[in-house]
Amino acid sequence: MTTTIFAAFSAAALFTKRRQYLFLGGVLGSILTFMCLLSLLRFFVPSLGSVFSSTAELYVGLVVFCAYVLFDTQMIVEKASGGDRDSVWHAMELFIDFIAIFVRIVIILMRNQGGRRESKDERRRR
Image (cartoon, rainbow, N blue to C red; front, side, top):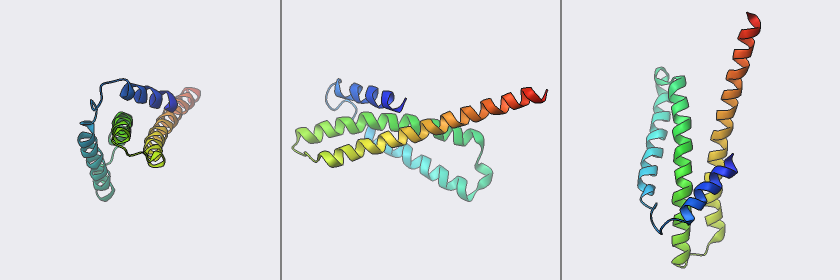
């Protein structure tokens, strides 16, 4: 799933007009900062934490990192056309996005699997 998502968003970034998704950098950075501050606030004020907020944070994080694939891919293309040929660092940027997407998908699948187990256990008890 991660590879499919990553390939689709990379292809979308490569086949669109140059610099079309570069505006996403500021928006995504702001969303990520807000999510970090919200997580930090939930750490110090546990009453704010709920299943809904952690689930929302998980799905918003998945969307944010999918958008980061778009942004980073176009940024790499722009840097390369400007003469920056540091392929190791460019690969590292995309690797970080890939891992962030992978971790969120694994957590989502584990939660869904856990929910199925609980519903099966409840049916057995009846």
